[in-house]
Each structure stands twice: as C-alpha cells, then as structure tokens.
Image 1 (cartoon, rainbow, N blue to C red):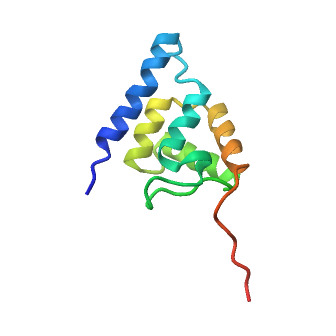
Image 2 (image 1 turned 60 degrees about the vertical axis):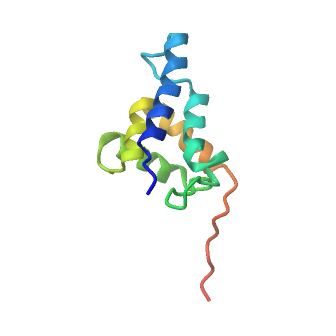
Length: 116
C-alpha cells in the first residue's frame, strides 16, 4: 500500500513556501494555488482523479461540493488527505464557494442513468 503522507506533506510545503515569499501567509495560498492543489489529486478540472478511490468532483452540484468542503474543514467529515489539504490551504467560506462553483461548471465523465 502506498503511503500518502509524503505526498500530502510535499503539497503542504509547496503551497506554504510561495505564500510566505509573497506575504500571503496570513490569508493562505492564492486561489490559483488552491485550484492546483485540488487538481493534484482530483485531476485537471476535477475530472480525472489520480487514484480510483478519489472522487470525480467535476460537474457535481456546487452546493454539494461546498457542503462537503465545509464538513471536512469543520471536522464533521473525516479523511486524512482532505484534512491535511484543508489545513494547508486555509480555505475561507469565499474560497469554498469559488472552488465549488468552479468545479460544478466543469465537464464531467459522470452520467445519470435513465430509469427503464
């Protein structure tokens, strides 16, 4: 089994170093860095996760994505990778709404099956 700990640590460090260099440490990484952090696991535009266990977030309802991110951030939903990412990204409510809106508008490989 592959340990994700080094990947999460590297992602957190990669996000914090540019923030410190630009004086953004108090507000967290820039929004583009937050999008890139999501894409690191969920794939470009959230449509092609790097592991089968990671969900496709492209095309999901914005309110569902926002609710899930807030639940991870507030500890009501538990996942070690997401907890580490949210800690490193310092997502505000505004960030969560922007991320949810962005990913909800992306093309998704998911489909709704029609009842017969």
